Image 1 (cartoon, protein in one colour):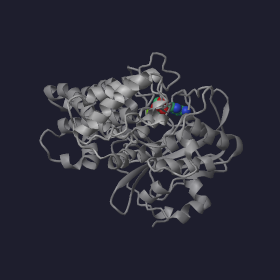
Image 2 (image 1 turned 135 degrees about the horizontal axis):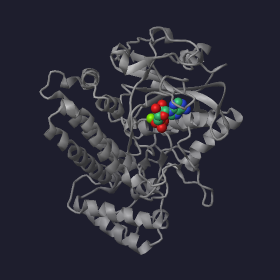
Image 3 (image 1 turned 90 degrees about the horizontal axis):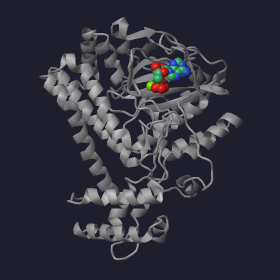
Image 4 (image 1 turned 30 degrees about the vertical axis):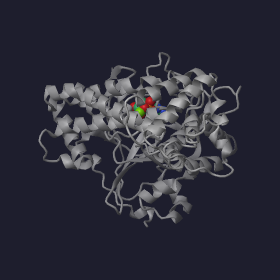
Length: 489
Ligand code: AMP
Ligand code: MG
């Protein structure tokens, strides 16, 4: 285990040509204090647990002090926002402190979000509000708990800093981690500037550090594109299977590693509704839940176009289909697993679609219906009441259950064993908006961060039922006003 001062910084991104970034130091928050720390992420950096009891911990992770060896930068990128190309974005409020190499030889970028102005801040203030910081902190770990590739969250630091959005709000900083924060937009910027030599520099960098098996391969850039397309397809499939919407799937929020990146107005669906739009500012529903697979296709095509100077045109043209095949195959696999099916049979897709249609017409809780299906028994003609009663059209659900039971018999499924398997893929707990809201309310109004810690702990293992935590597994009571989440974070 390591003291903060002995973290092994490497800063490979800061060693790229200057055009890739701006060297800039974080602007600290006055009187910083630690809001929450995530022991699981600290362990990835080999940080000794006694370290976060030191006052220096908050100072290092709000930019008041620089960790020895850190060479902070803001990364340049551009991207397509809501379908329109924006020639320059870049880290307008996130500052990369550097990369830490842990004892296992893994390299983690430490990025401080809300760290102050950079050359890329445009009209922004470089800050983040505590509300959005808590949401990103918790959802990153919730996704990790669900087995979905994502950036990780180390800690939140707050202090005496007021940030103006619609109203004045307390500010905070999030320390997030990923092997790299390179995005599709990191490539697009050099394509549209016609700086193809930098495009190649970046592709070589990404291959060297993140796809090292492609070093020296034939057609490395085509293979890189291929692998990113597959990873992105798998990622989108996982979002769809768990019922989660990102909310702002601009190409600058698409990770080159296929990680879930940049949590803004995201949302887990509660009542199943394929047209679900979690981003209040997304008036046309470009980033609705059901559009995500197509948006993934659109975005991967944008990446392929950006890399086209390095790749044969036929290979570029084939990339979107590679994405689509990977996404569809993984989605089918995940949904089969959610139904507890081990074998692939003809008709499985229809079994899934018919269930989703029933869920749609009854607006049932997506998470809880799948969790509840584990209790279906082949010898009993009706589904458990607790499940059946959620549906408006009970007979239609009975018909579906009969088909499901028949399908289970067709592969000689064993009920108890199947339920154990299903409970490992159908979460009991997700980050429901009202739960996040409660944690935010206590944090912002009362400086009580215990609920943040409780959710962090719960969502780290969302599959295991915890005694006394039943209220965390249900939607808000009917009649509660919906929580509106916008981009203003
Ligand atoms: P996002 O919607 O968070 O993915 O951000 C899109 C772009 O706006 C990125 O370049 C961000 O760095 C920038 N941005 C977002 N919020 C702020 C802010 N408060 N201050 C400066 N830049 C920001
Ligand atoms: Mg972003």
